[in-house]
Length: 391
Image (tube, rainbow, N blue to C red):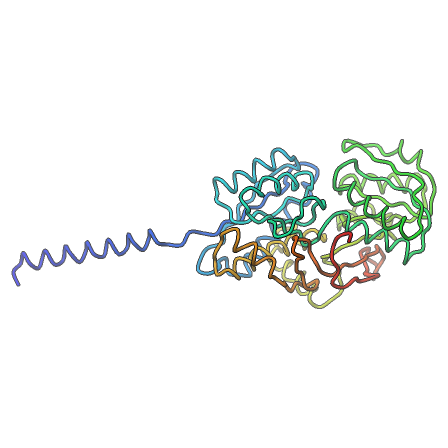
């Protein structure tokens, strides 16, 4: 072999290696993008950091990848604003190529996002939505069903289990609070109860005095406000000397922050949760411990604090399990089919979906009590494997 031939052979080998590397790079699997529209500002800003952390915990359980593809989560702040939230969802789908959208918590923003996603069929994994957004073989998957369903269950419990006959109602004048209370009122009246008053308070309300001054007495007060408003309302309610039992007639939003801010003024408040860190089972305790170990160095979120945190973990798990079931196929039809066929085991029990995307699973009635010298929730009733809406 001549020196020239040798040189040519080396050159060909180097060129071949270059092309192998180039082809390998070009065929490398792109990451799977999950878009998360959250609220780091606005009326739901208190909850936003917990939601992002919950998704992070779920992704970690899969080692950060599925079917050899990296799971990349992009978080966007919708600011509890419908227009901004839709813009963020559009950016996640059209620019970032997200295969699934999770959130937001604010139903006034989540509803138009679902409307936008309907055109592309991109799955929308969310907590709760109003009934009109669900349709057979659609793209919406709400494991906690409808707000009216949550309210209905509370109204049923108040009338049938607690035996109350009359109720006064007060809530934020916003779509999701309206839905919660519509469901609660429907169930309460079906059981023979009577609503003697209903007050809707504007979202910019700071002083609940005028509403409390005109509040009529009844067996029970059914209420629902976003967390900052709820703290203000409960404090004022107690200052006005009302003794009517307080029932949060919708999804529970009471957290450790409430116990710190209001102390014993929260005792006796009854609420509903589908996923809550206070549920006293080995599975839930193990999950809370895992959370605390992961976020031990982040004081502001070192405890999951609320049921909505747990719900966001479940939503992330639903999206990830669907991706796993398809073997990494992120086409909308494949992911939707995987969601409809799913039965996910969670620390709070199994979760599945009806053919319209409404969730099926357990529900828990909780009451604030003093336990071993600390204020927190105790479970007072469990509904097993229910369809989470008004049927």
